[in-house]
Length: 418
Image 1 (cartoon, rainbow, N blue to C red):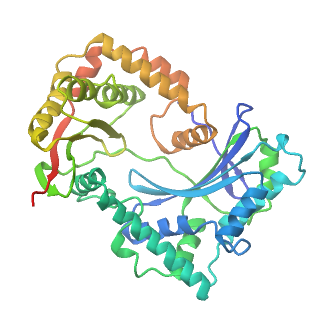
Image 2: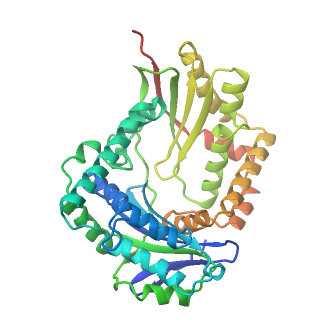
Image 3: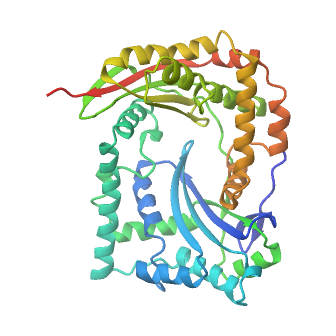
C-alpha cells in the first residue's frame, strides 16, 4: 500500500485527512520513544500532567477554558506498541464554520500550544502538592488492578510471557518507580519528548492545509523526526506452563495463551484477523458458542489479539468446580479449528469484521487514529484493500493458520478457601 507522506510544517510532520463527514475536527500530536523502564513511568506522569500550563495553572481554569471553546476536549493518553511507548495528545473541537466566532479556531490552536509547550513546571508549595496528588492517583491505578481478579490474573500472565522483554511493564509504568519522581524529572521528560521523540501530527476534519500551516507557524520552530514504522520481528514468549493460584475472588478466571505467526504481508494480516474472529470475537465465535452457550461453563468469555507481539489469549469467568473442564474445552476449540473450518462460520466472521471496519469510519477520532496506525504499523490497509483481501480467504487458509498457533500454557485464578 502506498502510504500518505507527511508534510513538514514549521519543523513538524503533519498528516491531514480532509473530510466534510464530521462536525468536529480532531488534532492528535503523537510522540514515540523506545519502551524503557527508565522513562516509562515518567512519560505516564507527564501525560497526566499535561493540561496544567503556565496560563491555565489549575484544573478548574483548564476546564473553564475548554468550556469557553464551545465544548472542545483535550486529553493525553499513553500506549505500548511493539517496542515503543507512545504519548497521544488529542484536541477535538467543533467545525469553525458552525461557530459564530471569528477567533475560535485560532484560540483553539493557541490552547493546544499552551498545553504542549508551556506546562506548569514552576516548583512551589502549590505545584508540589498537585504533583504529589498526581503521583498518588497513578499509584492508585496500580492498586485498582489488584482489585479486579481478571486484571490481576492477566497482569501476571503478561509478566510471565514477556519476562525477557520490556513489554512486561505496564503501559502506565512501574509502581515502585513513582515515589522518587520529582517535578524536575517530569520537566526533563517533557524536554526530551519535544526534542528527541519521533513525532507526527494527524488532523482529521473539514480543515485546509493552509489553515493548519497558519496556526502551526505560530508554534515554536521544531526539528522533529517523523515517526518511523515499527519493524515486526519474531517474539519469544515465555511459556506459562499450567499455572494455578488462589485469590479472594467470587468467580474463577481461566486464561489460555497462544503465540501466533508473525505477519509478513497484508494477506497474513487478514487471515490472522479472521482466524481470531472465528476463535474469540462476539457471539459467533467458537469460544462463545462452545464454552459459554453449549457447555454452559463460562459466565463471560472474551479474547485479545496483539499483532505486534504475536500474542493471542482468551479469558473466561467460571465457577471454581468448572475450571478444569472449561480449560480443556477452551483448548479444544483451537485444535478443532486447525482441523476444520466451516464456510458458514468464515462468512460470518468476514461479515462481522467488515462491519467493524466500517464502524471505525463513523467517528472522527477513530479515523484520526487509523491515519496514525497506517504510518506506524506495517501491512495496514485501506477499506478497499481489506474488502479485496477478505474475498480471497478460504476455510483452508484459516485451518493452515491455526496449525501455526503455538499453545503457550494457561493460568487459573481460583477462590481462596478459608
